[in-house]
Image (cartoon, rainbow, N blue to C red; front, side, top):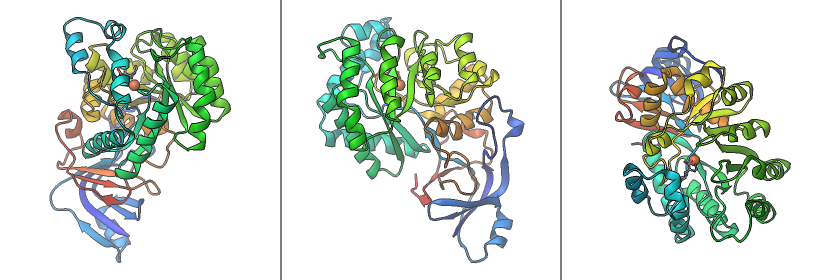
Length: 409
Ligand code: NIG
Ligand code: FE
């Protein structure tokens, strides 16, 4: 047993609800706190003096200076496995060309597919490790990573193997998701339905046999796959017990309805969601995931996060880190920006990047600093937890524990 402390403020997030609004007065904070851990698990969090008295034989990791502790963050939506970059797209957008126009003229997702296909599996693995470690240094200890820039059986498998191997070589936990239904590739000879059918027949069995992922994502959008096209694909995924997540309502609606209908774990984006979509999400068990990094990257409106919470929905916040719409990859900065524009309380923001995001990944062993959970936590060199969002990502964690091990910063 190891005791770590004393910690000026420890934000546990204990007992906060999965759905609905949370006022800042409800945020559970222990002052002069400590954390007791054994191997990779939290044994107790409590007042430091009480912990030291309760576990007299434990080894003590005494902290010099003042710190605030929060759970390691969970980024439940990223595309950090990719080749190349799309700085050209970014400049074009800022010069007035739209995201969809750029995509139609050979830029956009297809450009990244071309760059990603040129990478070997080993090169992609190194890219995943590099991006995951960068995220880890800003306190993100669990990272969902999507495929979706391969768009053929071989290339999607290459991406998912790179994510699998990357997971073994970073201290962060990577959760892989298959996004082969991102776009019908330009070199596929056939309809959208034929492409999706080809994935069901040829890719789904390999995902299972190689244990590459348990999660299926799809981009439901007029420029990608329609509600009617995607339904049989999701039906097939469900029949094989895959968890579902959907890129929904980014530019046009329809995706969130599909997500709710198929019992998806999450519906992500939602910038275009209106009252009907918000109501349906709030009534469901599907987590609504706001991606402020994509709003900032594209210069679009934010997902209606405040309305989703007020209607009783579960709101997570993720980075969508990708080379096209969200190149920044700074979750805390983006969550803080969403908070200012959408009026999201500090308690709701921390919930959205911890246990609510974990639920979007079907993980219930992390995201709160409570006994029995994974010992994933980060320490900031400050005495006030509000400083974390106030500094909009520029206050960096100075110590990071992942699965009970200090990995440093
Ligand atoms: O989540 N919307 C679709 N997919 C990604 C963007 C991928 C890209 O532009 O490369 C997203 O924003
Ligand atoms: Fe995305």
